[in-house]
Length: 162
Image (cartoon, rainbow, N blue to C red; front, side):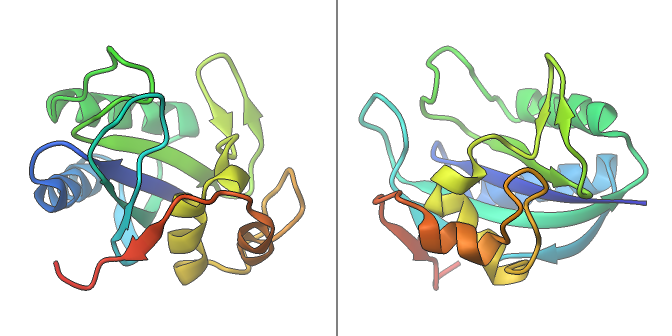
């Protein structure tokens, strides 16, 4: 069984409902939920003014390979209306594989660990909530240390109302 850390997020439509629907699709199509973080609200990275994002980290166990998992996740994004017309633009849902076990994968389709984990507080805060001591297999630092060293200045807030 493979242990996978996913980041789900979106900033279009009913953001909370989209996170819940994405989670349901992920569990139906890919594996079993082991743990989930709180939901966090954050300003958007990107070149254009856009609504705030909701983000959450899920830990799943799956029998799928990383590539097969990616195929399923991209299909879920498509089913949920994800548009890729504007790079880093608004989206109904975005599903990223952060870690896949402690594997390092560099292929034209997929890079694991996700190459920008250490740069983004909206990824590191929910990761640290559920896996502060997980060791980044490339940087050889745990998530807590990566958060401490992160230079991201965007505001990230844990959602208390759901």
